[in-house]
Length: 83
Image (tube, rainbow, N blue to C red; front, side, top):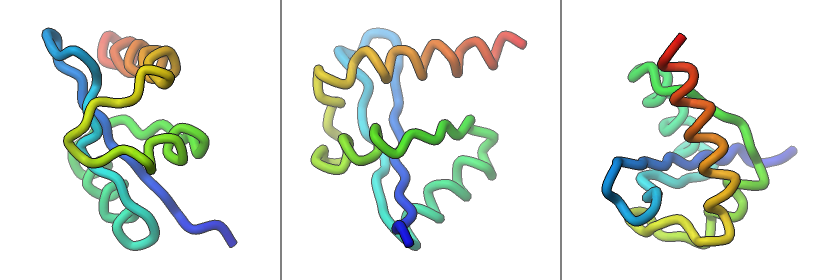
């Protein structure tokens, strides 16, 4: 059975890149997911992205090789806000 994993990213206009704000596995991942649910933050399931982010420290910018996929996710989340 795969261990549950989760990451949270934040992007604000003016930042050079999105920032990893939380990253965890197992019980910590469940806490991250529950916090998102409690705060009405959209949850996007992408195991490959979380795996790629596992090498990044919380508070760091996402790696450049993830800009495209993260930009697509951010655009999707912004489109949800407009509905």
